[in-house]
Length: 330
Ligand code: ATP
Ligand code: LTN
Image 1 (tube, protein in one colour):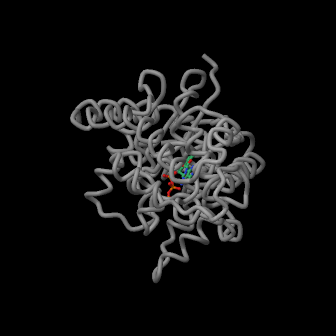
Image 2 (image 1 turned 45 degrees about the vertical axis):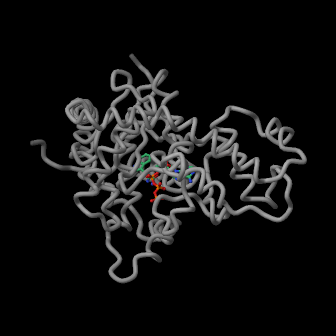
């Protein structure tokens, strides 16, 4: 009955990359056996950058189908769409009232994304982390599995929980990040000093979970490496290091095994093998994905049942919050 709670979310802001898969979704699957897990498709977050409505709808279902195809089971965890659960936007408003502009201004993701938005910077991009804190805190979450890039946002969620608890009395559980040691940051294939990102202008920088085998082979072949010519795991060879991480995650082989296997063998053969393990690893997910996308009724059933469960759980917390801040009960 008293299982610990896990919460995480993925934005439907475009095709998901193997970075999203390795850093986040793959780990969601194991956690559903032991914890009470909520996995959300955060469409409210997605509109902090411009979206085409028709694509947003399509991408939202796509994330749900990828969740399911990766092994998330709606009998074991709650899968839902953020905009279907009103409490997320409502708690954000309350938490905005205790958020400091200065702290939000220091968020790396805000600084980076605001550089990219040329003219009118929108306010939602600024309060993005407050919405993320609301997602997490509504479910009295214990653990939040995310990639390395979300660490700072999680710190903010913890701060807001503590600040609210101190101001109004104990209300929120203070969540812990779950960031794996390995694969928490998959890098761009073109600029291995930057994270692999689905919003990258250059499509050779990322591999999508739904990329066709030929595309995967082509992208890995073009991946930036170095002139050293040895498959070794170190920070002088960021491109190779990244490919080794990817290889290791998809094959299950250790870094040491990979180093030994490719001693004295050039990058050409290594890259071919990396591409092959990725192709093989993604094939069953792609197959299940294609079947699921043919069954829209099933997808609808999953997200409707999910939002009912999420609504119930989140309203419990929101009611407490409203009472504590002094709103009259409806
Ligand atoms: P964008 O790249 O468009 O800014 P994103 O992929 O970072 O978006 P989300 O889709 O919300 O944003 O990310 C979902 C999860 O995937 C998060 O837990 C995030 O930390 C993780 N993630 C994203 N990119 C990587 C990566 N390159 N390596 C590891 N984990 C990643
Ligand atoms: N900001 C996250 C996505 C996200 C999230 C969350 C992750 C939104 N709400 C709650 C964990 C918990 C990102 O990866 N870009």
